[in-house]
Image: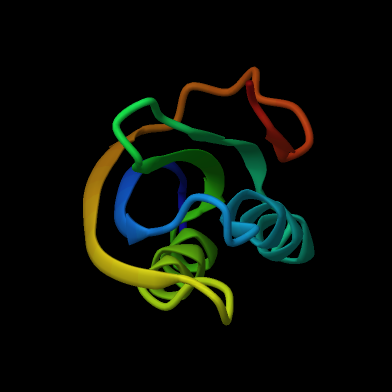
Length: 92
């Protein structure tokens, strides 16, 4: 499949439960590039690039999140591959 970009906004109990750390670990294990960060309104935002099927694995994982999280909603926007993203990291 072709390379794509996915942009996610995750709502629920997703801050203060290591969501960013676990997302970075999952994305790196999948070989994706991009970033994850907390938003002031309590959501977590994720931008990732890679193979579309692999990105879907990350999207599926974000619906569950780490053990202490409670995901209420995941907003997903598929975008064209842009490139220029380095190893998956935590943005501030």
